[in-house]
Image (cartoon, rainbow, N blue to C red; front, side):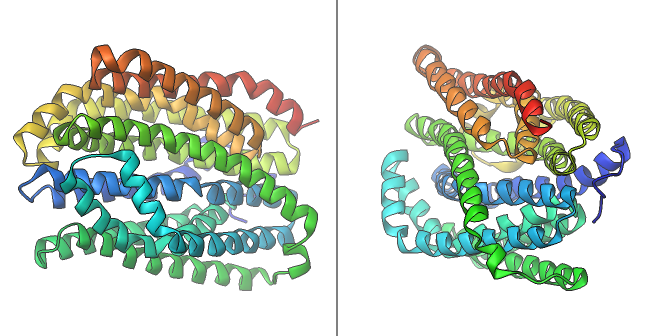
Length: 441
């Protein structure tokens, strides 16, 4: 394995895992930045809104299945820590089977998902029309997207950060290049952005599976179907996946609610919020590199029953995450106006985005703690805590929105989102002593 379970955790070992993940992660929200910039060259603001709403729907759909990456990563890390190669293989195959079935189900149900989603989010007729076009192309990438979650989680759990970086970079660069080509060269609009996502998604999962099979050949381990579909192991996997799915749906609901309320405020506000959210996401994905590192290192430590290594993983990854969070907040504040002008040519959207920029600037530093705890609890597979603390935090978010949006408008909406980040960090922190006791009982 890349990082043996018994090896000491140092700043260097943390960076060896987190930096490649940071680089691959930051290219993911850059898809949104580039797509917004590409579609923003068209004269009407509703094109930006259409892609923002359409992408938000897929965030809800795919993030709802984000448990595949989280559970695969956590279980893989623990298998590595325990030195159990057979279980490591079984984790991947189980996850891919679930992903394949779920992806096909999403395609079958896509007409219902599309209509209900756009009805709930709202927005102008133009946003809906172009957003549905984007949706109709991208939905065919569902099995590939879910399969890629499994492969990425498997790589992360083994601390094979460079392979995760390679696959994610290939996915994101191909997506951005195809979007630019289809829209700017061929004259397509939202259909071009959706087609780019479809093609790049299938190409990336093919690359990831090829790399996974190569690893299995080098390990000399073959899937044991009896082990893969062992009743006890399968039941444990499905139970954990259920907990993480509820947690993820709550998280996506919060962001969906945020976008929906912005959409109801008009095309300019939803477009401005989309621009700012892209800035925040670039920062969040950078910080999340350390959450991925904590997931792998904590999971391996729990699998090896090494408490000292566990504490070192928590401390060192968190210190680095906080440093990067502060840097990201400063960068968004300083460079935000320039990036806003690059992303959109609409004077109204530029002005609105500048008005709400301070909220996007403080979001990275407020979100650091909850991002880190996500990685720690995933590595320890403390899925019930992840579920319960997210439900509580969502309740805090909705209460804050109810109290703040009416008197403060979009400022209140952004304030509620940042309160949500703080609530997640506080509730996770309250469960940390219990997690350590259970993990090393």
